[in-house]
Every structure is written in C-alpha cells, then in structure tokens.
Image (cartoon, rainbow, N blue to C red; front, top):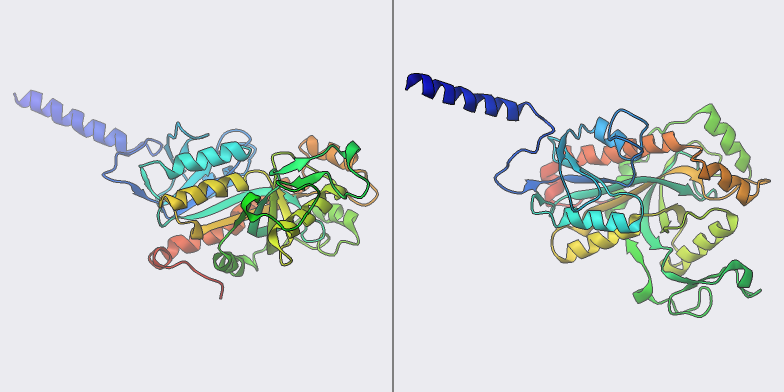
Length: 357
C-alpha cells in the first residue's frame, strides 16, 4: 500500500510540475480573465515571433505576450501576458477584423468591461499632413467603402470623382445623411491624453527615409522627421493610390466629418473593428469610450511630384513600402507608452478614463 500511494503522489506532482512549466499552455482559471488592455494588430507576415515582422510581432516580443489561448471563432489564437495585456491578430480586411473582434468580445473567458483597446497598424499618409514613419492618433474613422461608384471613364465632366454617397445622386450632395455614413468617432478626451503622453516620442529615422522624403519638396510636413500627431482616417478594402484619390479622401472626410475634420491616413480594417466594438458596447461587453486607434505611416498615399501614379503604385504593389519597418516600430513604441501607463496605474485607469491635460 505504501508503494502504491507513493507512486500516485509522485504522478500527481509530476503532472502539476509539467503544467506549471509550460507557459504556452492555457491554464485553468476559476473565472473570466480580467483584461486591462487589448492590443489589436491586423496582419503578420509569418510566425508571431522570430522572423520578418508584420504589425503583430513587435508587440508579441516586446510585451512578452507568451501565453497562447486558442480562439477557433477568430482569425488567430490569442496571446496574453502576466500584466493583463491581450494581443489580438484580426487578419487583413474589414470582414476579418469585425469577425475577430466580435469573437473576442463575446468570449466568456474574458472580462473586457474595463479594458482599453489600442488598435495599432500601419497605413498610407497624406503628404500634406504627415511624414514617413510618423504616428497618427485617430479622431474619426470614416468608411470609404459605403458609396455608389461610377467608372472613371463615365464620370460627368462636372464631377470631381465617381464616388457618390449612399442615397445621393452626385458627389458630396447635401444634406449629408448621417444614418448612411460609416463614421466612428473615438473618445476625443482619451485621444488627446494619448497624444499628450506620446507627443515627444523619438521615432526612428534614417538616411534612406530622408532621401525619399526629399522627393516631396513643397510638402512641408512630408519632409519633416517622423512625429506624433492626431487626425482622421479613411478606411477601404480597396488599396487605392494617387493624388486624385488623395483629393477624394480629403473631400470625403470633410463631407462626413465636418469642417474641423482632417484626413491624414488611410487603412483597411478600422471601420470593421470599431463597428464590432460599437455593437459590443451596446451589449455591455466592452466600453467603447476606452478605444484608441493608432496608425503609423509606412508610405505616402500618392505619387511624388514628377512621378506617375502608376509608377508609384508599382513600387508599392511589390511590397516596397518606403517606411515599412520604421512604421511597425513606431506603432509599438508609441502605442506601448499608453499600454505601460494603463498597466502601471491600473486602479486609477480602471475607475476613471484619462483625459487630455
């Protein structure tokens, strides 16, 4: 009997030791996991760690998102760290982003009611407002897909674009219909706080970036070293490019956002992510006042003076984003300042949303 009991006790100890030494294995918990920050990235080039990075890898490695939790209803497994930071990789495109965020928001394993969301990705920048490697905290995400469209070869001569708002018969027809607009405003006070916290962040620069920026002589902000600012974003599932499309994006933002709106950056997924979060807010699963959107500039959204839009797009379509790595780095460096502040002051941040000083 003594031998049997000893073997049984040894087996139990061995199993307990094995479970405690496997950080990638999901641990059994007595209740929902309280999450302080959800970091949302959209794409990864290969593995989560150790190879050529996408938007997710720097977050996984630098935030030590070491514990892996399966999420079959989403695009990718979830990662968490010991500080209550959760990493979500949504997949590219509005549909995948919305579905993955909804899958996480409805997952009973997590308590997201006090969680802050830092949606951090790269995008194309308006040369009138930003430079390569810069970071934009987003005030409004405006959906560029919700529209009618006429082919460019059939646009009436008096029209500036073939894009027409839903429910209208010509571009930018007034009055604007808010019910048909895909406009998602972030919490202006929280965004102002994030900007104040990160405004003086030193962002990566290089001689190659400086040379490329000089192609945009005459665009005062485009030739500046990378900086942190705030502005508005246009989303679209079509990767558009060129100065004519940039003109459309600026007018689209003014039409839907009002005279104070300022288009600075374009991306794909954020309208889907914010729509999912709006629905989850209504279900009291998340607090949409705690959502931040950060886009960093990997490329300009238009051609340089003296270059055709087609030539400029050719370089981009080959994956040659002028500031790809600096933009990835900036997204994590700038965004992590917010993450670290929230974790360090969690009791205060959980009870009260910070605001601009």
